[in-house]
Image 1 (cartoon, rainbow, N blue to C red):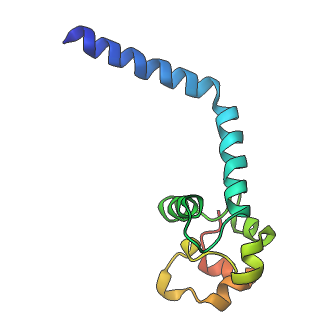
Image 2: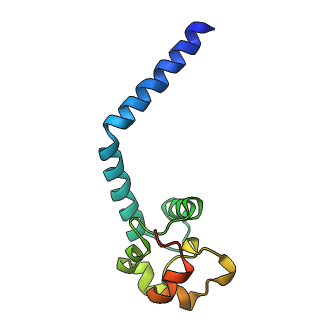
Image 3: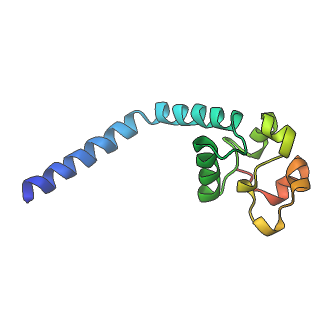
Length: 110
């Protein structure tokens, strides 16, 4: 039992060290993949779009850097910022999401 526990501890320790050493690469890779997911975001509820929605709802964020990242997407020109960015689903109309100045007050800005 002690050997198994020690092995698990070593695996976690190695994973933490590797994560720390490669943190910049992990961050860059995550940001580039999230940018691709935003570019290809659509309403057909594919895996990537669902992942973006889940990330934004769970982390209370919007876009990669901030909510204005959505302005560069095809989705924004058609429908505005996604509802998954809204602070409150009840107080977030489609007109608000199409206007970046109004959306700033309704969505997560980071």
